[in-house]
Image 1 (cartoon, rainbow, N blue to C red):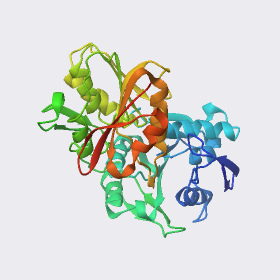
Image 2: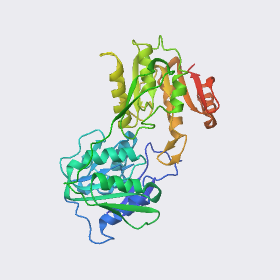
Image 3: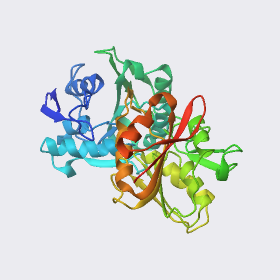
Image 4: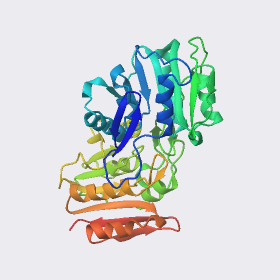
Length: 384
């Protein structure tokens, strides 16, 4: 746990799920800079008496600090939302003080203060600015925040093109602020998201089908090579009553399972609400009406009852925001083992150098290579 000192008091904050071994804080210098700006270090304090919306608050540090103003948090991250709930509880803030919404929800009708933690994905920023633009007015205070490495010329151009005139602050502790003056009369193009593309041939049951990608999804304009390799080396699906596409992204792997066996129940799980929206749109466009499927925002397999799954298909991420880590993969593997029935299987695709085979052998007591090429490996572990 770490303590953030603000003019509003000291806050105990952690990332989610809480891990005492995690050296990363639940906020950074950009959050601190933004809060200091709102307090008036650059002039008078910001009037926060209207509707305050915070976009992309990663673990709830900003809305916890601003809880007295009953802010609205908009996030693409289930983990970020759960982290916010935990940090509010930790600091004695009533849960209903902050209104939690996802990037797929309708924004508040009127936004008087818009605070934006610049996301890693420029596409997600573009989509969200388009969605929020109709709700701001000429007097809306718009302030973005990010580390210097997160703010580029392209970032500023998005603010300019979608909201209005934009400038930046000087850097402080390698963080920078973005100031934008909304122009309600600004002529802007239509939101280009979501986007669709046709899958290539040679990827099994999904060859040639159209997938839908909402903004922020990895490889939103093409099939990434790791998923392509996985699709070419999937296990047989007949007789699998319950299949989980874990970390589903746009859902093409789970779709392949559903097309291979229409009687199987497929559950799509991701911590990104944008990903789940993509997976559901992709699924509905390519299966018969009434085909069984569930779409679940969750921390890995935490929402799946133990011993209820026959097959888990997983392409785990190896980074969180800008930090490289195998913590997410490890939680996914542990959760999969708990959710699998005896004889159930976990199939994982990953870069060869990540060494997932060692973790799977340690956890399952077995692991075999189902397929490999110079870059990727598909691994199979069975729950005994």
